[in-house]
Length: 200
Ligand code: MN
Image 1 (tube, rainbow, N blue to C red):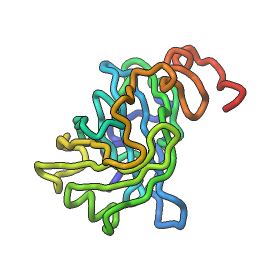
Image 2 (cartoon, helix red, strand yellow):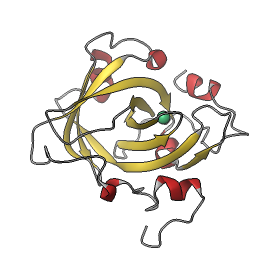
Image 3 (tube, rainbow, N blue to C red):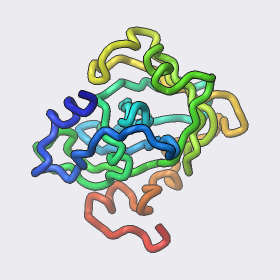
Image 4 (tube, rainbow, N blue to C red):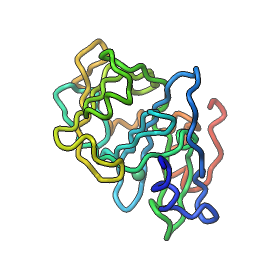
């Protein structure tokens, strides 16, 4: 079942992460989220709603708006749609222990004329992101074994497509980008349990 691996890895009486459920088909817009995750190694988790769950990739260096940059994206287990709202601290000793920030979130449109499900299966996913930080066309490419199971750590590449939102000078390290789009907090403020900023 789609969320078995997600649930097997977590103890829901010990982590604030949602147990979640697989969503049926609905008319709502497809969701994407990028979470900044200060775990044993800092990384970004890129997630796209496909088939009622969030198909997920760990992107060590995070996405880029520079089309010349190809970011390694390692496929990880599917997460529930509810996870797109998860921000907080996963306790020591639990899977993925560390602080999670909703770094960017929004909807996306599939591109290229195929459903996201078919694109995922063939190992080439073209999307247009409508986020606060990430906008425009992106492609996820899997040169190897696209049909492998979600948790099998297949290596993909995340690349910005050339369009009006491409920006070779964009840097993810820019401090202006380093706040939650959900609460306005930095990783440090999330870790300290500070409240959301008033304007969020
Ligand atoms: Mn992660």
